[in-house]
Image (cartoon, rainbow, N blue to C red; front, side, top):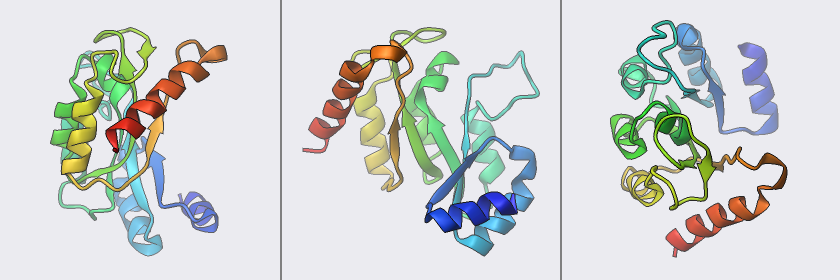
Length: 167
């Protein structure tokens, strides 16, 4: 873990992303030492796979409760939609603990593909409203995996959605 933090410091990074919830004590020690934030990144999961808990925003909220405020979530809205969760509700569960956001809008809840922001079930405007209300100042990543070899037009629509929102 120290090598990762050393690299992040050399690169001038604000935050590191991980799924290593079992290393929370080490992570907290290094966050304090290096003054670099850490966000736990969620991938899809469900109650039938009890060993993987990072998908659940309530698990992350409990994991980071009482910990250094620079430890929180690298919130991935698309994976929450895959799990059948409404992203804005997940963001509210993690209020004040969102280190970074990987925004994704999807065609439907459950297994489905990406769509440009505002065209799916993720309610990206409500997500941006919630991040703004929380005073979120981290980075937002546009992650668009559908139509992988030719997704520039869709990514452009996502950028335009965020730019229009900011006006």
